[in-house]
Length: 124
Image (cartoon, rainbow, N blue to C red; front, side, top):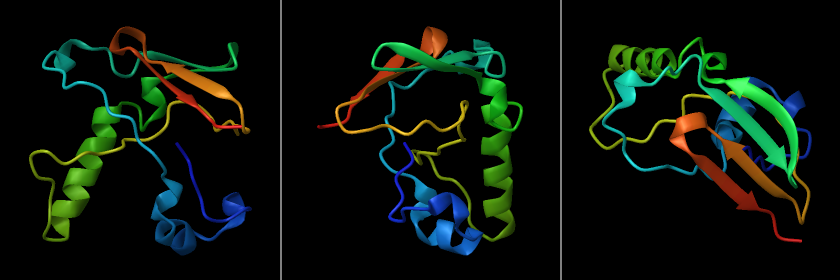
């Protein structure tokens, strides 16, 4: 979920966005999957519903063509800087839909095909 400390965060310069933790807020992680190689990550359909109404369909390929490509890019970029990813690190590979602003009282559900769904209720 996007969660910025700034009201007009879409108008901010990149250094400020990065200082705001890339506007990242809560991240919901599902169970570990050992069958990930067999999942059509680029073609995985993602559906976002707010208050029971479908607001958008996306797909896994919206994250640099394949979420695994985003992960590989990050691993390589960190390795060039002398760091790297370690076992157990959690990585957010990007969004598959456009942003939709939730309001107090909203209930949002994102369905990730065979991977399941995640739900968040925003308190009124």
